[in-house]
Each structure stands twice: as structure tokens, then as C-alpha cells.
Amino acid sequence: MERKHMRFLRKNKIDKSILVISDIHLGAGVMVNGKRNYLEDFHFDKELVDFLDFYSADDYLNREVELIINGDLFDLLAVPFVNFFDDEFWSEKAALSKLEMIINAHSEVLEALDRFVSQKNKKLVYIIGNHDAEFVFESLRERFYELFDKKNRCRVEIQLNNNGEYIPVPGVILKHGHEYELAHHFHPVKSIVESEDGEKYFLPPWGSYYVTRVINKFKEERDHVNAVRPIRKFIINGLIYDTFFTLRFLFATSYYFIMVRSIYLFKQERSLKKMYKHCMNELELFKDYDTLTMDFFKERPEAQCLIVGHTHDPIFRSFSEGGIFINTGTWTRMYNLDFGKNPSGEQLSFAQVDVLDLKEMEYDINLNIWKGRSDLPYEEFS
Image (cartoon, rainbow, N blue to C red; front, side, top):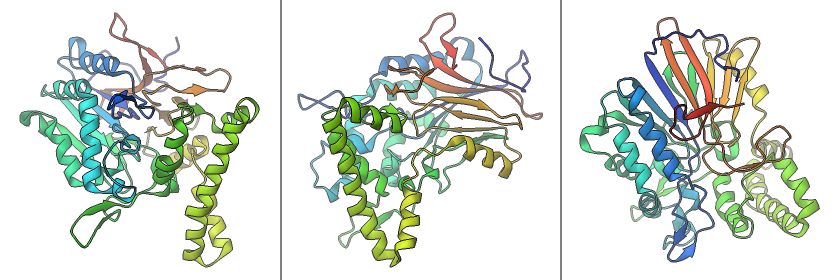
């Protein structure tokens, strides 16, 4: 299979390996209170534990390894089983309750993360995405650190900044990806408000409201409603083969956007033209990454690689002008209606950046698919 390190040179000695996974979406578990949890999207606990254990042992035992979770480790938007009313769903207390349910449901994964950073040459960086945006609360970040042994916490870092950018080595830049979409953008400080009685609340972007009030409700009927790409073909096929459900879904989406966003924006802007322009920007979900990435490399000539997640669509692309774009995909089941792509099931994809010469900025950059520990536990994405 063709290697995808492109113009970067390969050497025998690797100074450091950087692993990037994203969009794990740990939920409240398959069963909650004796009932099936139709919002649980993560079903690969054993595979993820195996992945973490592999990269902290054997050939990687003595190598410096930095594991970066590039957003949406926890799916705090998909835990409706907390005893809070609708508006209270966004309170700090509710966020902690949701996080606690997820911790209990996926304890093996979190224990494996602790084992990973128990070695001095291993590091974990956790970048906040839009599904775990409630980590803006300091109490949630503190709870996450508590999952690790005290002696290991110095090797765990939570990244929470306004532009969401993280640079592990010069020329390699990471973003979760929601920052490119106005519907999912939130400020890490300004999104927190405090009530008169001292209770803290998160002010979510409208995209988070849309997930909890529309997507989650329709997932009870069709659990694939948020797992089909591209969205345009999902709608076309849905209108043909599942007409009534798709029409209801489109109506609910349109009604929600009109009532929640358009009217609110009109009150803010007091101008139909400004409101229309703002709405179009907010509706621009899952942007065209080809155009976006080419613009990125023009603006950032020092960049060799841009790595994102968010859209759940694994992509490896190199540009003739220089630069590599990677979308690390997801560790949840997805269905793709495009020819030439994996039609159904899972691709447990991750990026691996092997540092060959840090001073010369020589890196071997690949997008891999985890297949389980064997003589060769992964294969390259194609």
C-alpha cells in the first residue's frame, strides 16, 4: 500500500510519536436504568483500550508518545437521563451529573488513559470540542484530572482556548473543527453566566440546542440520523426510501431554525438583509475543507500539516503546493453514501506523526486505521 508521508523523509530513528484521535463520543452507556440508551454512539471500549495499551508498551515502551484527543471525547449533548429541567440541562450541576454517568459507563477506557500516562515518556492532551463544550466549567476539568493518579496528572493537559488551536511540534497544527462553523462556536469564558443565587450556566451555541432538541429526538426512531454522510445524499435517499420520516425531520429542522435563530437574529439585527447573511453563515455546516485548507496554508506558510476532526469523515489529502490535510474521522459507526468510501460500519482512524528530526522539521505523517494488536496492528487509510 502506498505510504502517505509524501515529501517528508523517513529515517530509522524516531524521536517522538504523536497520535491524534477525535470524536470518541463516550456516552451514558448502552443501558441506562434498565432501558436501551439510543443516544449511545460509542461501542468500541475494548478496541480503544487495546489501542492505548499498545502505544504504551512493546516498541513504544521507551519512546516519547504524545496522545492528543482532538475534541468530543465525552458526548455531554447525548446524556438526557439527568434529573434536571430543560434549561437546567445546561447548568454546572447537570454537566457534572452527565459527566459522572459517562465515567461510570466507560470506566475501562478512562483507566486505560491513566495507565497510558503512568509512564514518564507519555503525555495526554485533551482539546475541547463542541460536544464536550461544558468543560468550560472548571469543576468538570478538575473532575477529569481526578481520574488520573496524582503522580500522573502532570502529564495530562486540557486545552481550552478561544481559537482551539494546538501545535504539538512546529508546522503541525490541530483544531477540533467546530471553530469553522458559527453554529457550533462558543467562547470558553463568555459562555458562562451566573444566576442571582450563584449557580453557573453554560450558554451553548444554537448548534448544541439543535442536537439536544431535534437530533436526539429523531435518533429514538432512526439511530443513524446523525451518522450518514454526505448529508445531501442522506436527505435525497431518505426522501425516496423513508419519505415520511425524512419530511418530518426536515420540517422539524426548518421550524427549529426559523423559530430559534431567524426570529432572534431579526430582533438583534433589525434588518432582513443582515439577518439573511447571518443565517446563511450559520447554516454552513461541514464546510468544504478543500477550499478552507488551501486558504489556511496560504495564510500560514509555516504550516506543514493541519489536523481536524468534527465532521466524522476520515480524510488524508496532500496539496501540490505543499501541506497535508487530515481529518481523523471518528470512533463511532458511520455510513457513507459516496462511491469509493467505506459504505457502513466503523473505521477506527487516527493520525500518527513520527518526528524524525525536530530541528529540520522532518515528519512522517499518516492516517491509520486501528485493527487490533497483531504483527501489524493498523493499516494505512486509503
